Image 1: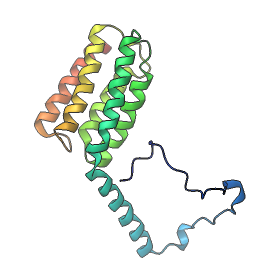
Image 2 (image 1 turned 60 degrees about the vertical axis):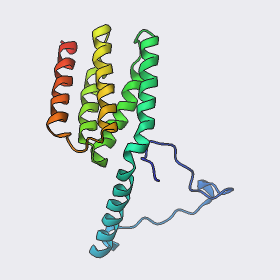
Image 3 (image 1 turned 180 degrees about the horizontal axis):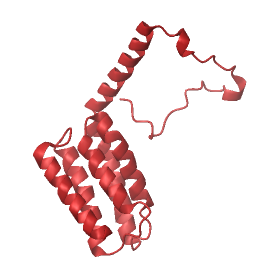
Image 4 (image 1 turned 180 degrees about the vertical axis):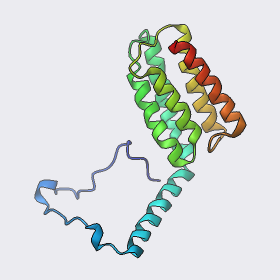
Length: 168
């Protein structure tokens, strides 16, 4: 199953060939693309995203594991560096809505906003960060697609209120 762009990709260059040895391929000028071809391109892209969305909850578990590890490390290090937590959450935030999980995007955005460029310290801040991480896990495990309905919106409102208290 294809993975999102942020994951490791294999080099499509045949073994032994290097980009510098290959002639430049001509780029397609959009003037040269018929409306039917353009529609086919969009349909193919939509089909690829739909296929990836079907397995999103399977491979996003890897991101949750990375997030758990990054948070555990930050806690162990006295919470001096949340950059890895931010990086993983930022990736998840970008993918959530694309694959039908707007609530993942919304929780991710709230968490990124809480930790980006701020000095987030203290036990309460750690608890709020951890609550966001646990909420992401619940959304994925329970397959709460879209905005999560009333339950999802109540959860998001609670997380935002807690984050606002920490941010002061």
